[in-house]
Length: 119
Image (cartoon, rainbow, N blue to C red):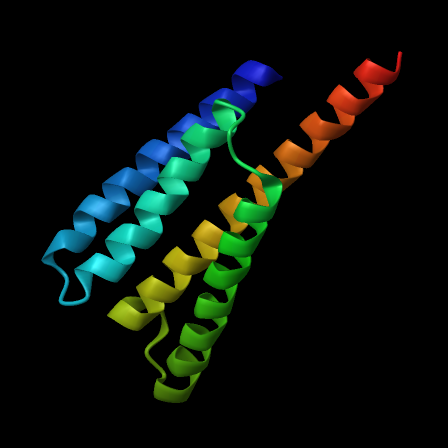
């Protein structure tokens, strides 16, 4: 299972780095490049056991709020996923989902470590 999680985490980190690179031709590139780079960093840090679950949770919550704000804009302006705002909404939701997965992994690891140390 560890190999599967490592593959998912590092694969997602690589994916988010590519997404950060794609943003460089965007007018608001810096904000999105940072968002995707931070998600990539989370995937690496969780493998190194250096990511506190609270940091992943807060970052994921912020990304989810951003996604919800953009969803409102998409619905009001009827831009959907074909327009930039729709793609940005999906990107922020993907980051939020990935952070949620990382939080679950970290918490499961903490429980395993806690039970192991009690034995």
